[in-house]
Amino acid sequence: MLQEKIEKFKQMIDESDNIVFFGGAGVSTESGIPDFRSVDGLYHLKYEYPPETMLSHTFFMKHTDKFYEFYWDKMVYENAEPNITHVKLAELERQGKLKAVVTQNIDGLHQKAGSINVLELHGSVYRYNCMSCGRFYSLEKLRGTKGVPVCGCGGIIKPDVVLYEEGLDDEVVSKAIRAISKADVLIIGGTSLSVYPAAGFISYYRGNKKVIINKSPTPFDREADLLIQAGLGEVFSQI
Image: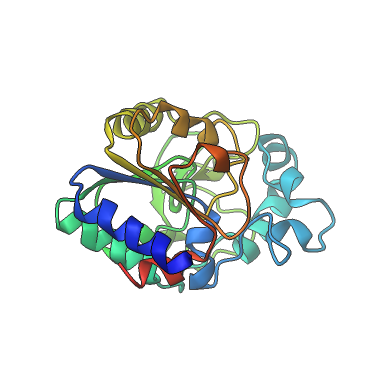
C-alpha cells in the first residue's frame, strides 16, 4: 500500500513542472533537529518556563537573558546537515520542477542543500538585527556569544525569527500564497498543520494534487488527494 502511494507520488512529480513544497519541523528531524510537538520535541523538555512562553515576544522583552539562554542552547543547530528530503527538493528545483519551498523552519537547511527560492515564514537563525539602529548581524558574526548580544550602539540584537505574538513578514506571506495558489502539485510534509497563520496558507491551493506526507495525522488529511503516513526520508529517498 505504501509502495503504491510512493509510486503515485513519483508519477505526480514526473508529470509536473510546477511543484511547491510546504514543510515544517518534521523535514529537519532526520538532520538531528528536534521538532516542537513530538514526544521528543522541545515542548517536552524541562525548563523554568514552557518553551511557548520563552519563545514569545513578551518574554524576549522582559527576560532577554533567559530567552537567549534557551535560544543558544535549543534553537541554533549550526552543525546540522541537510538530509535526503532537503537534497531531493533542491534537485527538483534545479530540474525546473519545484518552484518554491515554503518552510516554517528557521534552520536554513534548505539553502544549505542548494535550494534558492526558499520562503521562510518564521525567519532564520542566520540573521539578526539591532533593535535600536537596525544594523544587520550574521550568525557567523555572533558565533560564540554568551548571553545577550549587544550592538556597537548599545542596542539589543534580536534574531530575525518570528516569535509568538509577532506577525509574519507581509512580503514573504504574499510570495508564499502566490506560489501555492499557482502550483500544480502541492506537497505538504513534516508538519502537524496546527500552527497558524502558516497552516492556513494551504487553503489557497486550487489544484487536485495535494499530497500530505507526515508520520502522524493532521487536521487536513481528508483534503489530501494523496495521503502518505510515513517519514519524509523514506519517501524522498525513492524519488
